[in-house]
Image (tube, rainbow, N blue to C red; front, side, top):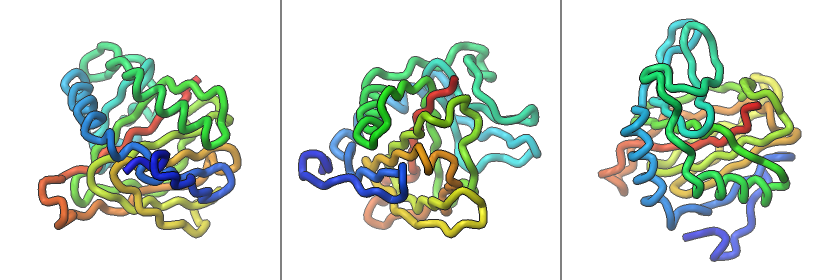
Length: 211
């Protein structure tokens, strides 16, 4: 069920934050097959925070840059630190859809250089945080969701601000920028879905302009 086909308008969650329900649902299987291919070149891994904690979600990247974390800090790197090779190319389909979603959310001239791919197993989560490792905060973040559903915690400019709980399901797209670009956000622990007994993961693709 593609929201564009069924005429479902995007929902403005906050100023600068737009939610496109089921936008890519019909294409989910194709996207996940492409993610599997990317992971054969740059396998998923659990990175460490600068403080030495293991990040709950497994991660990989595609694009000109990839987001990495270790005891040296959070940063973008042009090469996979495990293999020393450049990250896999970002599929043109990924790039095109991310740009289109950004434009429809009101952000023109978005040109993603990195796609961070998070794989959440059941029980995995992501604490409240800001995306601050990019050079230009006028550029939005674009997020695609596939697999198991997730409770997306979308807060405000400070960690203490109240969070909205938004259910992200297969094919949902979320774009935030402008006034919402540095809002805190996170993912509540992923739960199993009895209606989808063969689904063990939630995949999240986030597109960013790095420089």
